Image (cartoon, rainbow, N blue to C red; front, side, top):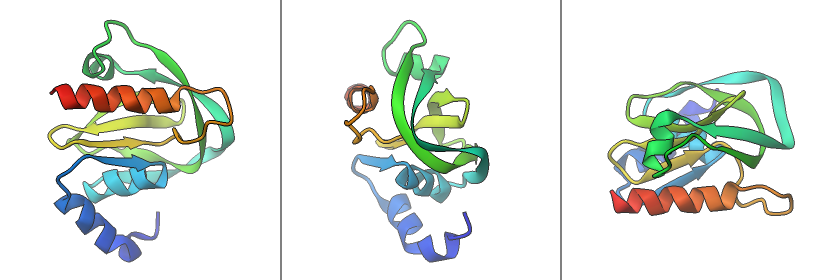
Length: 138
């Protein structure tokens, strides 16, 4: 938020990109912002903690699940995605807003959590792998 003028090249790169793309936390914000999302400050920032996220009905279907599932992921951030562009499906959300977004026509995935963080017990990495496996099937 407030850095859009400094990120023009990054937004252009995202919009021209054609191969699979994963945006993690700030990268997710850049990804969805390039397509017109807006961000808002969190009233209670998430600081290096485990957050429970829940798949949406559309997200569960995308993942090939019959039911909605909850996952524990590691997160740390001050902002949330406020307005979601129509180009994206919200796969999972938490009390802090959208957590996983998938582009409707491009192999782009954005996650607001940190799947690379493996020092704590969380399911972020396996969840991202599951998303990409299911996108590849489509």
